[in-house]
Amino acid sequence: MNWFLIALVAPILWAVVNVADNYLVQRFSQKEKERTSGGLVLFSSLIGLFIAFFIFIFIKGIFDIPNIDKLILFICGGLTIVWIVFYLYALEIEDVSSVVPWFLTVPIFGYFLGYFFLGEILTRGQILGSIVVLLGSIIISFDFKEGKRRFKKKPAFYMLFASLAIAIAGFLFKFVTIDGNFWVSSFWEYLSLGFVGLLIYLFSHKYRNEFNYMNKTGGKKIFIINIVSELMSVSGNILTNFAIMLAPITMVYLVSSFQPAILLVLTIFTTKFFPKILKEDLSKEVLIPKIIAIVIMIIGSFLLLK
Image 1 (cartoon, helix red, strand yellow):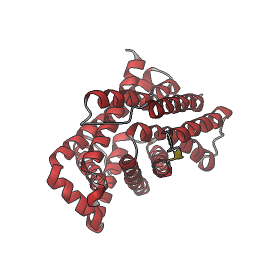
Image 2 (spheres, helix red, strand yellow; image 1 turned 45 degrees about the vertical axis):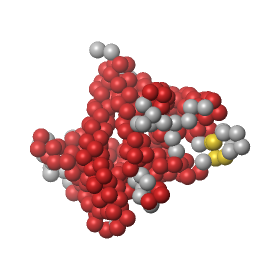
Image 3 (cartoon, helix red, strand yellow; image 1 turned 30 degrees about the horizontal axis):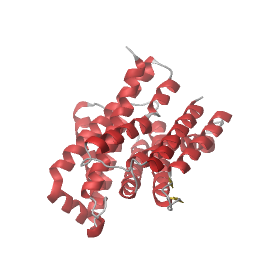
Image 4 (cartoon, one colour; image 1 turned 120 degrees about the vertical axis):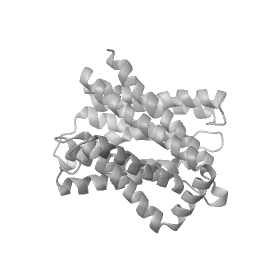
């Protein structure tokens, strides 16, 4: 079985999920009525309860882990909410093809977490790769339109914090799961995701109103898209793990880093043929710097994995 094709399906699935996320944000986030993505945050988090329920049905030994591990996994769920909030807020003000490449900074934060908390040594390749990825991130966050050349601070700020939250959550999840059961850990993380969502619904008047509005105007559609997106994300993760068993982990992760490029191709295709789903500016002054930035970031990811 060809490991490359298996590994390649994962970033394709994730890119489709990114397009779906962007569609939901653009369809249901209405700034003129002071409605933002808070409702989508609750939809995404409450989905965790359904996923946790199905894991509970099919997986044994859910409660056979130490309480401290449960607490750590609950923190992971909370951090998942954090990165979802920043990610969706970034999509409100920036093209999805400019937002998603920022996720390539997650390994940078992961390496530095390992350096400070696990005493891991940073190689020259990792340091150089980090610099190259950050360079690409800066380029993709610049507006190169004539008369508008500026650094777009807000989406960059949002995605830096989103990537940091993902790195910390991944670091904690791996710490708990390394000698345990992936699905048991996933149960507690998803349960936490849903529990935190319930707390937000109960105590955040703004998010609750946004959620109720979205539920009335497109609740079924949002729920179905979120469920399908989550299934595609999990499928991508499973395929990546399977590919790792067939090929060196470095090569598999390198293929995963193609996601921004795949997403860019997908956004160009969708803009041309399905503009009601997604529409981005395809002018040369926008598209060429974006392509250059993504290529630079993929090269940086390759250096990170050496």
